Length: 96
Image (tube, rainbow, N blue to C red; front, side, top):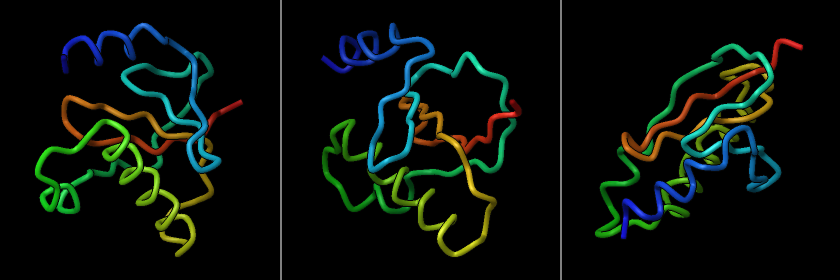
């Protein structure tokens, strides 16, 4: 079932889903040029979950990115790219 879910998401190239107001690319990348602001991980928060759903992982990553932005630890960002195979994300800023 996990492989089916990943493949269904991976077919959505270049399309972002808005989660908590943040454009999120899951297992895909934006078509617009961008640069990496920071890489974040769902760990250690994820360790507390016995069997996390994809939405749980994505919410953890979005919350972490927003928290870093709010605390001014990073510049204002445009989107995040989530890698579900490693439970991490890249926070990005578009160059155009």
